Amino acid sequence: MKNITALLKGLWITVSHLFKKPVTVQYPTQRPPISPRFRGMVVYIYDSEKGRDRCTGCGVCQAECPEKAIYVTKTKVDETDPESGETKSVPRPDVYKLNHNTCVFCGICVEVCPFDALAMIGEYELAAYEKVDLIRDKRDMLSHALPKLTKPWLEVSSGN
Amino acid sequence: MLVSLLAAVLMLAFVLLTVLALTYLERKIIGHFQVRLGPMRTGFHGLLQAPADAVKLLAKEDAIPSQVDKPAFRIAPYLVFIPYFMVFAAIPLYRNIVPAPLKLGLFYVLAISSVSILGMLLAGWSSNNKYALLSGMRSAAQVVSYELPLVFSVLAVIMMAGSLDLTRIVSVQSPIPFFLLQPVGLLVFFASSLAETNRSPFDIPHAESEVIAGPFIEYSGMRFGFFQLGEYANLFAVSLLISLIYLGGWNGPLLPGILWLLLKSYLIIFIVFWIRATYPRLRPDQLMSFAWKYLLPISLINLFITAVFVILDLNRFLITIASLAGFALYTFAIGRKRFELYRERA
Image 1 (tube, each protein chain N blue to C red):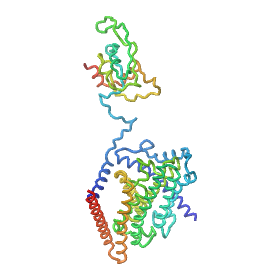
Image 2: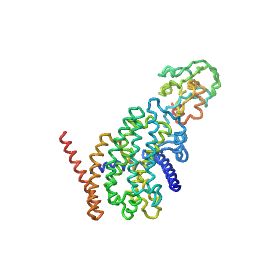
Image 3: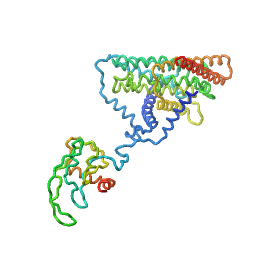
Image 4: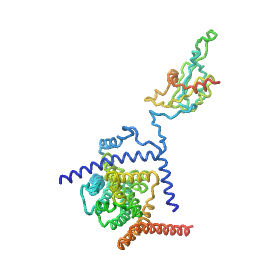
């Protein structure tokens, strides 16, 4: 008797699932919600208010990257401060490259950056046809970033 | 001559269409059981999935592995496919809608449907593959052992109806369908036909996790498609048979008879899918002991009780009560025995 009720209980459980709403997300047309702290593509932030880079090319990200995916070189650039109007020679990155082939999306570069010049956005479709396409320089990282840089990330990256 | 040929062609087309519908329905229903959607991309809610699969199978390269026994390998799919479709020749869809009205229809159906096990065995043997051979053997053993309780449970119905003619068996049920008089018979028949059709929980020959695809492992393209067609046709045949001999066939109020028959058989098919979504697969030894120690004695008890009551010509509902009592007693006795064995071991 106990065995028979057990069998019926099993049937009841499955049939109760039959009328539940399917959990499937029809991927390319529907997308699951991305949490604001999702560690997706690394982007380089250009300070559009002040019209200049935030990065000074200090190379902390390069030093801290566990996968050696970042390559930075520093130069001096003459820049005019929009507020005071005086021109100064400031350190800026000459070459900034991030290799998404080896990047493990640990987020250490974003965390250690003293100038909040890096951020991670909710972009996760990073596939490319050529490996070379995954080595992104400053301009590529910017162009990917600008339309998709969501608000929470701007707040997090410029909050402190 | 021409009329029966036309009937045969129509029946074949009907069965093929049903098989296409069944492959789609199974994927869709199992999907929803697992809180998924099932096929969605081909056509509206994946409605074109079955034709797309058929086209894919037809367009595939006809690959035959080099080490197989070629003549046997080639003929095996047809040996499975043809008997399963021959069954439909004697299955009536309504009083006079039957391609071949046979006096011994039920006997013919039961006999022909077990021929295809030869094809399974041949496929397993000729594939020159250990998994295929193993599962070919397994399915042969399974079908042979489940044939007995199946036939014995049908025999009780035949005694009550006094005929092997399926049309007559249905017309006998017009006030009271046989599932009320033969509940134990229905249970035994349903369980054994699950095993006959290699459906879960008796899908040991197919067991995806151990023997991959059973005897069909070396097959691809349309040869594999023929096996699949045969399997689904067999499922449909079995569900038609259950609704014909236990659920009263086309007897039913309001709706036209043929619709009643199809409704009943689709209900059976839904239950088969439901069971597949619910129960795990048995082990081969559990499968064997279930057939020989449980289903066979119960079907014999049922047959004996039915025989006695039919000869004494007592009230028919007494058969229901007596067979259920026999079923309960046997189950209790088996449970007691197992308990004793368990205590001895402990």
